[in-house]
View (spheres, rainbow, N blue to C red):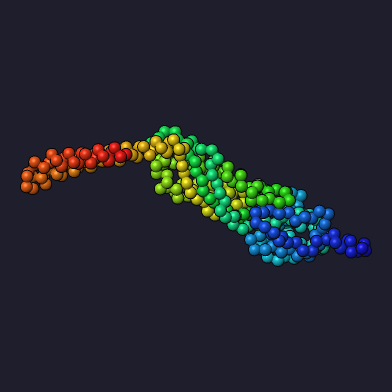
Length: 283
């Protein structure tokens, strides 16, 4: 191999990222000992962004498109490196690509029960789970706050951090909502909207956009759920008692109009009470 051929291979004239699989949010182009050829081509595909970084500081940011790298297209890097207008030499810079695709169907859940004060049951321990979706919106923020100078940063690496944020927000939202547990199932959409609003500023600080958030289930420990079921049954028993009284009260004027007068009231009363007792025993 000639010396000229060897030197030529040390320069990069095409910069691009062919995403081989889902799940990578940030990827550093492997520069090693190479330099970028002045006038090289930068290709940023749809659902990608590219960032030039000089000595750990974010310089120029590129959205989808094709670019020719000159002092005009990388003005921030030109300024940081003090290049003049006649600069046309190969140069060194770290280049990071970021995926801006929507990350769908990310699951969240409480690893341990959350303790809140409920006005009906006192201190209760709740579990909850659901799903959310997000996308990377600002690569400069994401690089500064999350990924840094790593060679790659994946969705799975970010997952635990986001789950911790969700659980902390869930605790604060449920604790401050004053919403009884018995009403939570009917208000899961409202709770999800409150949680999404509460988490949006943090996602924004990370350079992320929270696209969708859903609360799919809120549950109690088994023993407390049984106690609630018993309470509901007792409420039904009370309603049966009122129903029996109502039936008896309405039977008196009707019996007075029918043949036999009030003589049948006793039998009707006994039947009504007996029916109520049978239903209460069944509970």
